[in-house]
Length: 104
Image (cartoon, rainbow, N blue to C red; front, side, top):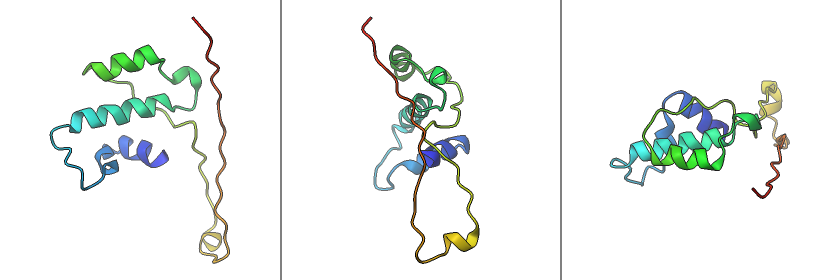
């Protein structure tokens, strides 16, 4: 997810698409879906769009807000000696926000 966010910020989001897929005629729609997807996984629940907003975003060609950092991303800085160790075990940390759905 972090890679998608980083590539989107660097205006290189199409690099996420499989090279074998011919997306030339649908690149704007693909970019729009990636962008909306990143808006849906922002760290703060108040920053995430509700589903009716997502439907509007996907069905229109208007400008979209810039996505903030994804919520399921933990930046890790480790010394180079640790990363090259042959018995290093990879792990990740996730902070999860749970959304409760209530009937209207």
